[in-house]
Image 1: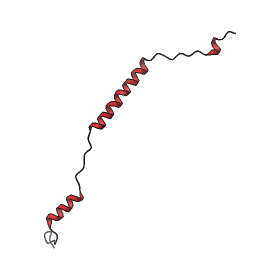
Image 2: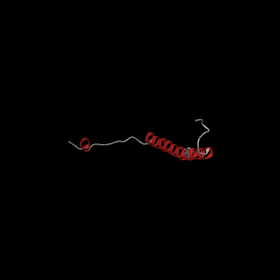
Image 3: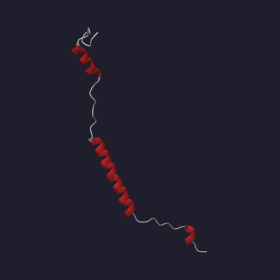
Image 4: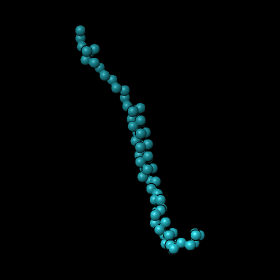
Length: 67
């Protein structure tokens, strides 16, 4: 039996195959880029604040008490 000796209509078979394999849907790129940009900006901002912050100085009460 050859390929063309089928009882099925070729157009219907092609339509069924097209319905079984829907085209791949692409996700938009801008939400990921926006999130990455926001993360980069906040990381740089926090790093800048940590570098420019004055050093932490603590004094212990026991060292400053009179003996």
